[in-house]
Structure formats: C-alpha cells, structure tokens
Length: 108
Image (cartoon, rainbow, N blue to C red; front, side, top):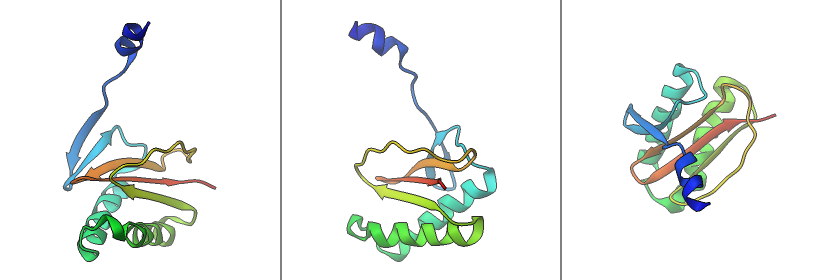
C-alpha cells in the first residue's frame, strides 16, 4: 500500500527566477510574482536575513501587496512551517530565498 502511495506522488518542480526558487507553476501573474520575489529580497536585506525578524519581513511584504494589489494579503515566512490555506485564483506563490520559504496569498 505504501509503495502505491509513493508511486502516485508527483515530484515538485522549482524554477529559479530573480534569485528565488519558485514552486512551479505559480498561481500568480508574472508582474506580481516578480514583485513578490524582489520585495522579499529587499526585506531580507533590510532586516539582516535573521529568522527572528520574520514578523517584520512578512509585514513589509504584506504592506507592499496590500497597497499595490488591494488588501487581504497573507504572508508566511520561515525555515520550517506547514500550512493549509484557501486563496483567490491567481493570488498564490510559494518560493525559497536561501533557506527561507515564503508563502504569499490573498484571501477575502
């Protein structure tokens, strides 16, 4: 039984763009995707790439997305987390920058 489950698993595919490894295909338009990566990189640089600064980093990303793409964005960032979320169509991305994972999505 366990062998059948392993055979049915689809390998996750990642592509590297703008310095991030992005879970492919993303459910987000290209302009938003690029903004997500670039704002995340800027926030990491500004706060010294410290996991303890995750709240500030996430807040900066959320603020950018709320201001530029209307409110109700959610940002999860860290080195080890699990999540199940419902999001709007074309409003989800999951990617890595170095050891940090970012999950950015919009929900009403």
